[in-house]
Image 1 (tube, rainbow, N blue to C red):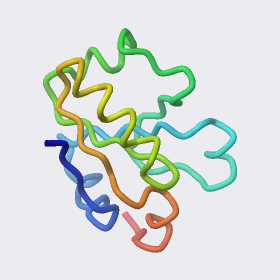
Image 2 (image 1 turned 90 degrees about the horizontal axis):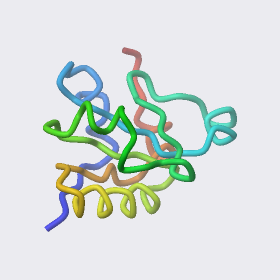
Image 3 (image 1 turned 180 degrees about the vertical axis):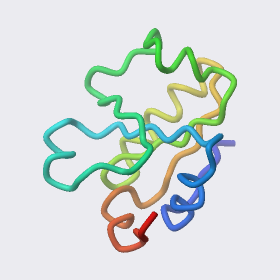
Image 4 (image 1 turned 45 degrees about the horizontal axis):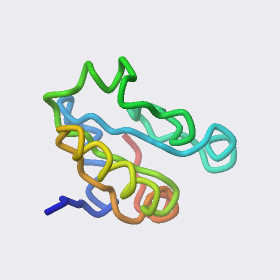
Length: 103
C-alpha cells in the first residue's frame, strides 16, 4: 500500500535533515508559486529512474510533492515499482502555501 503524508506535516519533514523532499513541479511552476525550502527539484517531465540524484537516495524515504498531489502520486507509484521508498505529499504546494511557517 502506498504511503502518504499531508502537506501540513511538511515543515517537520523539512526540519529533519534525514528527509528527502522531491518537488516534481515544472520549472515555470516554481517561478509562479515559489520554492519549497530544502526540496530537490526534479521536474516530472524530465524525471528518469536513472537520475543520479535519485540513485543517491535509493535507501532513503523520498517525499514526493507537486502542485496538488496528483502528479506526485504518479511519480510515487513509478518509484515504488523501481524499489524506492516513496511517500506522496497530499495537498501539494497549493495547500502548503496555507500551511507554511517560517523556518
